Image 1 (cartoon, rainbow, N blue to C red):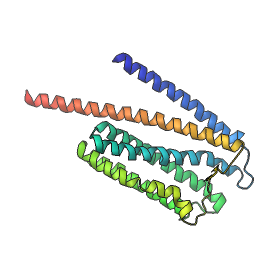
Image 2 (image 1 turned 135 degrees about the horizontal axis):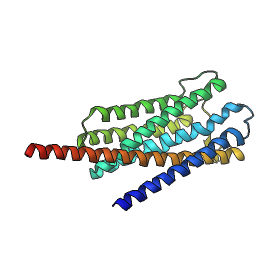
Image 3 (image 1 turned 60 degrees about the vertical axis):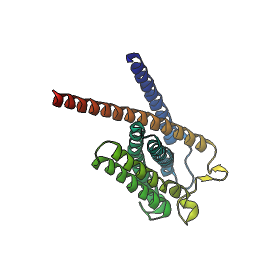
Image 4 (image 1 turned 180 degrees about the vertical axis):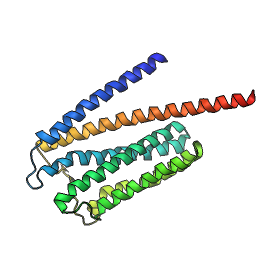
Length: 236
């Protein structure tokens, strides 16, 4: 058992180092190697961080909440509930970064930090939904009742994800369409820099998720042992 724990720690540490190295490479590529965009200029470099953050938030983290919430409802295994909780925390963090980087990008391009256009509005709604998810978990007592409520909330809340994605096609919007029917609307070195950033942020998400799930698992195990010790003390 100790050998298994040590191997898992070694794998996680190696994953963290690889992720850090690729994140650093992606940052250098985005800031210095990618060509300067003709219309937006240097501010366009925020795109290489903004889009990967949105991908992590909506495509990975919030979708993991959806998937593992369903898994909990089917199996009643609290391990899936803890994975959903960890993914929600990461999702809220990256949705926050997405909104901030989007606003920084919008100011020089649109002239304002914020406008109530469809994609920004639906993304902000998603942020509120999953902040509410975390508040629900915070106020509810640990156990299957909290897990069940959170799972239902997480499944229903995910409905906003496809709305965010499709908003730029459903409504008139000033938000650029980066992804079209023929793939990404960029080419050349910009495309490979974006691909590198997407890969780096995906690795970062997996690393953060595994790390946070480990912490939640240990917290749950500690709580169980403390409750068991209290029960044994009462019996004596």
